[in-house]
Amino acid sequence: MIIGEHQNRGSNGGHRRLTIWRDGHSEVEVVPMAQIGAGPPGLTPKDGWTVERQEHRIRFLRRDTYPLAAAHVKLQQALEAGIARLETFPAAYLDGSGTRVVVRIDGKERETVIPVFMDNDKGSRNYRRFMAVSKILDGFDTDAFTDDGR
Image 1 (cartoon, rainbow, N blue to C red):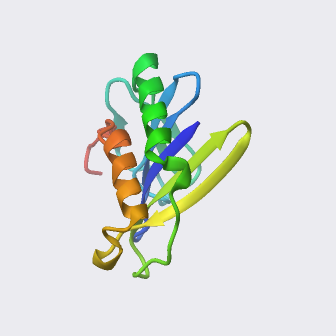
Image 2: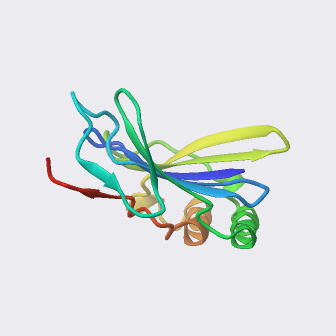
C-alpha cells in the first residue's frame, strides 16, 4: 500500500490523499479543513463522491478512483521511482504545506513527511526522486464538493 497526502498546514488547512492498495483498489480522500466550527459548512459532494461528517471534521471520499489495472501500474511505478526511499529534512519555514508519504510492504509500514522543497533543496537526489514519484501519483481528482456559500 502507498499513500501520498498533500497537506496544507496553514491555518485550518486540510489535506488531499491518494491511497493505492496492493490489490489494486484506490481511494482519494479530501478534507477541506482540519477543523470545522459549530456546524458543518455548506459543502455538497459531487457525483462519485461520498461524505463522512464527524464531530469536528468533514471527509469526502472517492473509492476505486482508478481501474484496478491502472492502480497496479501506478503502485509499481511509484515503488520503482523510489517512494519507499524518500527522506524528510528540516523545513525552511514555520508553517505551510508538505507531503506525507506512507509505504507498507510485507506488513512493515514507513511514514515520512516531506516539507516543501526550497530553492537550495532542489536538485538533490531526494528532490529528483520526489518529483518522479509526484509525476506518477499527482493529478488525481480532488474536485470533491460544491460550496453553497453558507
